[in-house]
Amino acid sequence: MTDRTADLDVYDHVRPTDDAIEPGVYRVVGTTGDGVTLLQVADADGTRRHTGTVVTVGRDDLSGLEPAANPDENRSIGAWVTGQLEGFYWSLRVLAGTVRERPILGTVALAAMTVGLFGDPFVPIPDAGDVLLFLAGAVGLVVLSRRGAA
Image 1 (cartoon, rainbow, N blue to C red):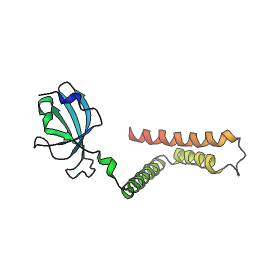
Image 2 (cartoon, rainbow, N blue to C red; image 1 turned 30 degrees about the vertical axis):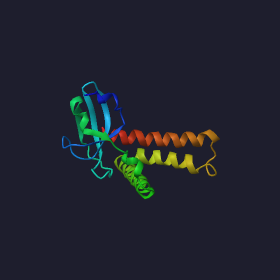
Image 3 (spheres, rainbow, N blue to C red; image 1 turned 180 degrees about the horizontal axis):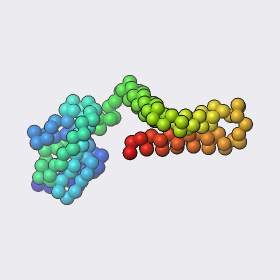
Image 4 (cartoon, rainbow, N blue to C red; image 1 turned 120 degrees about the vertical axis):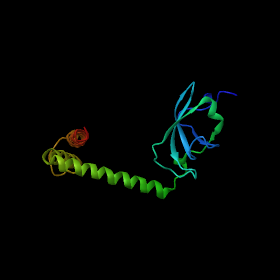
């Protein structure tokens, strides 16, 4: 039997040809001389799933795998737009939670971002000042949201 771990690289996609592991599409997330570590990224039909299932396949069992298409490449434009909108929604929820937990600091950070973005005709600040205010506000919100996670 040949060593098929040399043929598999991180980020390659495979699917099982036998019942050794659950049917689906797996992304290679690690390779060693003993075998490969796989993350399930799609179901048996190739539909993208976030299962969190990680399996290790030994070198002797690699013959039970075949190459598969990346399930992220077959997403429709509608699915991509939906994913982007969902990400934006969750970002807004995190932002709202950050401001709700620390209203004074969150409001100051949002105000700095707003003045940096829209204040140019209304607030007499140097050209670089609006960029610095926006960045300071954005960094402030990131710091505030990270402190809440700890």
